[in-house]
Each structure stands twice: as C-alpha cells, then as structure tokens.
Image (cartoon, rainbow, N blue to C red; front, side, top):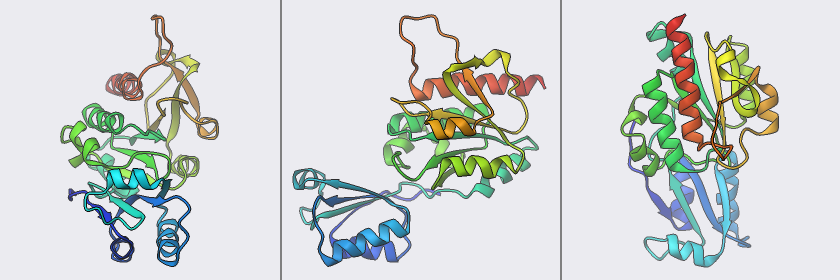
Length: 247
C-alpha cells in the first residue's frame, strides 16, 4: 500500500520514527559520530535490520532539506513491503505454481523499478530483495515500475541464501542467470520456480549461486558479454513464461 516517502532529519525525529514502527529503508550517519543519541539510533537501526551508511558532513549537508540534520538523516520507504505469504496467496488465487523473482543486491533504483514492472507483466507473483546493500522501494523505483508496484508484492529479507533454502522446503526450485551456465532454452523452467538475478557489476554472489539448482546462460552474439540486470531478468522471465504457457 502506497505511502509518501519521507526524509527524516534530526536525532530525536529519527529515533521517534523507529519507535513508532515507521519503515526505514536506510539511515545516513556522520562518520565518526559516537555520542549517545546517535548510538541509540544505530542500535535501533540494527534491531530493525536497517542499512546504515557512514558519510562525511558535506554529504549530509547536500542531502538535507531543512539544514538541521544533526548528523543523521533517515529515508523511509515509499511503499510498504509485503509478507512472503502475500506472494503465495497471489499464486493460489491465480491457481498457478509460484513464480518468484529474487534479486541479489540490485542497487540501481531504475533497474529495480523496471524489474518490478516486468515481473508484473510476465506473471510473476512477487519480488524478493535483501535488506542490506540493495536499493529499497524509493519514489524512483515506484515511478519506473509504471504502477506495477501497486500489484506486485515486494518482500524484503535479511538473508537471501537462507530464504532460498526455506522456499525450497515449500517446493520451489531455483535458477540463476550467469554466463557460465547451460543455455536457458535447454532447461526445463516450468513448475514452482524462483529466478535469481545478480547485481549490475558482480552478478549473482557465490553463496547465493551455490544454493541455486540450475545456472542458465542467455545466448548473446554481440561484442560485449553482459546485460543490464533488468534486461537479463526480462529475457529470462519471458522464457519462463513461454515454457509455463506450453505446459
């Protein structure tokens, strides 16, 4: 459900935001600041698995909308995150085997927005993102999704590898996109499936890749050997959709 993203500035304001249960995606803290209120904010952030970024005063000054950041700026989510059961409920409502997109540290909001948009169009039942080292549901993500964020559940998890293990117990199997894999057309991509897409620079991390059942390669004939994350997700997910339609 939509809500306006807000930039929360000042130590008391940020601390109260945590205590009120407001969803905070990340906080920016003045590097080296160790006074009592800031330590309390950092404890709350760790308790809620909120990303903490340490920055110089110049960076905070640039970000500040009020000029009174007191060494701390928090960014709340533009949209509420869903629960895992929301994804399975959507699949059940459509009488379809679950189809989930899992993202390994996607940091570009335009990529995330495009992925959510494609996930909706391709019939995926939800998107899973990690809590740390990844972009959250910012206004840029919402705009780029072209409204799909209102219909496609997005779940934030602490550990992607552990989440894959838990979902395997519910009958899902996993394929990740990587140039070292088998040609995607040669794989059976039907049934309950999770598609794992890596970040813009490093691809799927080693630990996450090891949890996947299959590694799929997208055929390419150009002079470069990599695709934008959202494009790779689109190519792979529509091949999954094609195979599911034939089944």
